[in-house]
Amino acid sequence: MKHTARRPDVVVVGAGGSGAVLAALLSEDPGRSVLVLEAGPAPRHLPGFPAGLLDARLVPGAQPGHTAVQPWAVRLTPRHPYTVARGRFLGGSTTVNGGYFVRARREDFDRWSAAGGPAWSYDRVLPFLRSMETDLDHGADDLHGGSGPVRIRRSRLGHPAAAAFRAAARQLGFPEEPDKNAQGAPGFGAVPSNSVDGLRLNTGVSHLLAALGRPNLMVNGDSPVRRVVVERGRATGVVVEHDGRRTTVRAGEVVVCAGAFASPHLLHLSGIGPRRELQRLGIPVVHDAPAVGSRFGDHPQVVMEWMPRRPMPAPTGSWLGGALHLSSSDGEHPGDLEILQSLVPMAGLVGGRVSVPGAPLAFLVSVQTPRTSGRLRTRSADPATPPSIDYGYLGTADDRRRLREAVRAAATLVTTGAFDEVSLGLAHPGQDVWNDDGLLDRWIDGRLGTSHHTCGTVPMGPAGDPGAAVDGYGRVHGVRGLRVADTSILPTAPLRGPAATAVLIGALVADAMRRDLP
Image 1: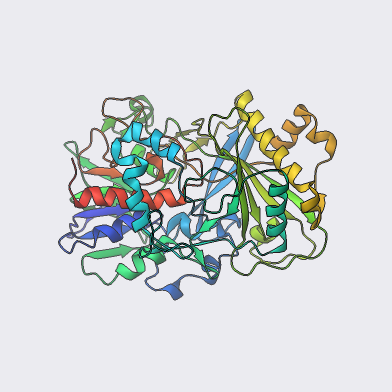
Image 2: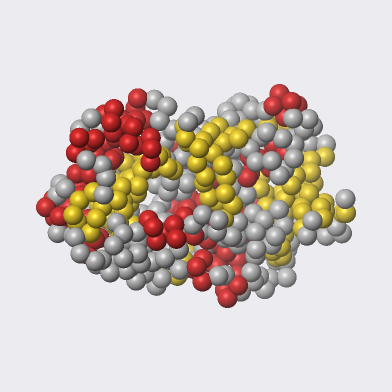
């Protein structure tokens, strides 16, 4: 195995929603050298991004076999295999997702600060949230930023289907929520997005491309990391593969930003994880960390399609329409049910087309209650063998009840007089199914999906807590010089999609590193 002569101060593993941000911010310090190792392609200029990755009317992650996507075989329930997508390109999943950029709720930060310390409280993170954005709708004020690298614009509600959704929500008495990044009461509103004028501005574009001219920053694409090298309790580098050859890159510090599946898998392969499971696989144990991969959370989702009454125009700027957040009947987590509108037919999202004449349009209906029912297990010491990933969805009566409530709420919206202006009704199923819990559960089982919001595989918490793997700044307990900085460190998934929070994690951890916070 070849060893390189380079010794950057920091190696960042992964240039996704968190890694690209962290690397760009660290490299603002000219005295700190930063090397980014991205598993997928890493173009140095905007023309290097295929047009389909920048078109905000498409969702590349929904397209089976897309070259910028890494598929992961999972089980949503014991009897429901599924394939989930993660970005494998500069910008990571922010390059292939829907451009949804909604902040976590204050309640989320209350939970996270209880685990990661006061730096995670809403009041402490708000300056980071403001500094990382340019809000094109609100401009700079007490809540929004006006000069950050991520440009934010809310989805327009002028499309006939979006206008009908808004009118239907109003008819049913749901409040307006004009700014979903302002911590107001949950309701109907436009979706804050990092897609502007039809362009999806992933973190590779917003953060790294402008920083590539710095002499202290290097970004290497097509360079998957296979193992973190740990010597005498300290991370000293990584083993990276490029063009079929493996090389050891030495570094002063290693930050793993590979995503909520790849990060725990890489830690396991590096000997950081549950001792007995690693020993069974023949992986030398570096540090017994039972929390790595032991649990995770995500949001179960069902697609509900409806038939337009007349041909609908194709969206011009984004596939996103409006979004309604409402509360499940237990009232424990306000706004934990989401009905998200697609202005592109599912057949178009899957097929990479904006317009599909005659096809139904859809609502993406999900339960975003914080739950950690999943588990990730490494099956082999060979990095090419993917881990076993079980979501554990719908394992309790409450899980099923919440998803039934969300589905019924969407069905009720479609039946309003206001929505009837554009709709002939749901494509499936019939009223008899909506009225019967057992029939509805079976219908949901056959259509169950996920929101791709995985969090918690390397959870933060205090040292000595067997349920925690890192501290609030991503430092791995028991291994010096090693951090994790992506959504895997969030103990629970937020009540909203985590893309904005992934960027926050990169910013917060980079700030801690630059200030050498204890």
